[in-house]
Image (tube, rainbow, N blue to C red; front, side):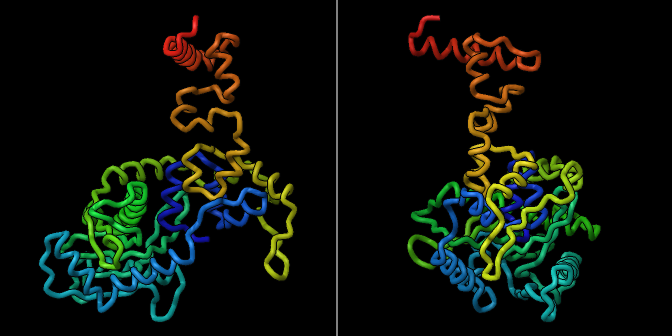
Length: 358
C-alpha cells in the first residue's frame, strides 16, 4: 500500500514506533494483517462515504474548476483573470510513479519560474518526500494553486460545515494532512533551487455546506502542524537501521490461497510481529490499523496511560511498578528515582483529596 498524507501524518505522530515504520516501508496491508491475528480495526470508510467523497470532488473540479475558482476569489481575495488547469494524474497515458513525479516536477517548476503556459491549477501532482531515510511517493487528491508566484494547497473533504462549524477532529486531521502536502511541495521547490517558502502555510479546505452539496472554502493556517511534522520527520530513524537487527527471513506474508484468503497460521504471524518493537499509546486507536493488537500486547504497561504519562514516568514500564513506587512498597532503582518522587507526590495529593490518612 503506497503512502498517503494520512499514513505519513500518523507515522510522524508516533515516530518511535518501529513496527509501524517497518510495515509501512514494506507496503504491508496492516488492516488485513490485524484481521488475521484476531484484532481487526473497527473503523473504516463506508462505500457510501467513498461514493459521496468522489461525487463532491468531481463537482468541485467540474467545468475546469469553475466552482473552485469562485471560492478562491472569495477566500484568498484574488483577482484571477485567466486560469489554466492541468491534470497530472497521468503522463501521456503512463501511470508510472517515477514518470508522474517527473512530470509534476517539470510542470510545477516551470510554473514557479514564471512560464505562463504551464498555468495556475495543478490537479493530482505526484509529490515525493523523504521518510525514514527513504523517498516515498504521495498520491494526493488535491490541487496545487499558483498565483503571482505563490502556491496554495487545496484540500477537498466531504465532511460538512454546519452553521459555520465543522467537526474539530476532522478539521485537525485535514490540517495535518494538508501540512504533509505543504512539506512535500516545499521539498520539490527546494530540489529545484527555488524558495520553498513560496508554498504558503495557508491552505484552503473545501467542504460541503450544511446538508447540501454546495461547496464552501475556508483558509487554514498550518504553521503549527508544519513545525511538528518537520521535527518528527527529522527524528525518524532510518529504515535500514530498523531492519539491521531483524532476521533476513522475517516476513508478514499471509500466504493467500487461490481465492486470496490468508492461509498463514495466526500464531506464526503474531510471532513475526512481536519481533519488531511497537510504541503503543491510546492515540494509535484513531490512526493505526494495528492499534488493537498493540494495545493487547501493551496491557499492564504505562504506555496504555498515554504518551505524556509514560514519558513523565521515565524508566517505569509497568503500572504495577508505578503503584508500588507511589505507595512506598517498592524501593526505586537508580533510573526510577525521579519518577518515584513524582508518583509519591501524586499519591499524597490523591490521599488529601479523598481524605485518606497517610
